[in-house]
Amino acid sequence: MVTLTPMKQGEYDAIIDEEIQHYAEEKVKAGTWMEDEALPKSKETFASLLPDGLNTDHHQFLSIIREDESVGYFWVNFNPEHKQKNAFIYNFLIFEPMQGKGYGKAALQALEIYAKEQGAEKLSLHVFGHNQRAYNLYQKLQFQVTDINMSKSL
Image: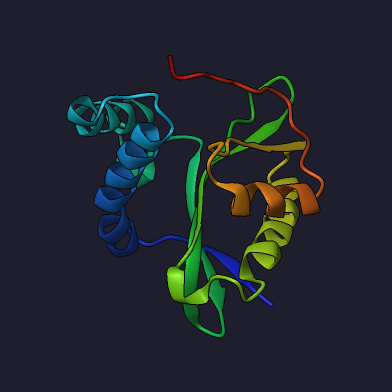
């Protein structure tokens, strides 16, 4: 149903600023960062994680393709030195008009195969607590909760 292909520089350039902005918004929504500090912190985080952008070691941006059209993408860390041979999904996005059509499930299944081919024995991710739709998808695909952070407003 879908295939994964390495993202080209032009595709990366088109999404990275939105990635940074979206991450800042999610951290504010989660109550982790204050709105006035979120964008600078997000930029710092991305600069630290991706010092060489698309060409940063162990990080791959993969376009999710259906019939020659990109329906979304993954940002995944494959670190062969990781003791648990873990692949970590930093971000996963199905573009808005394509959501709810089964592409998310198909993409994650394709990523499982791809990750195994890269030598990974485990696939991990983080999901914000307010993203119930994503959480439900991950549960359907048998991802297990490994940590839970909780907070209470006072």
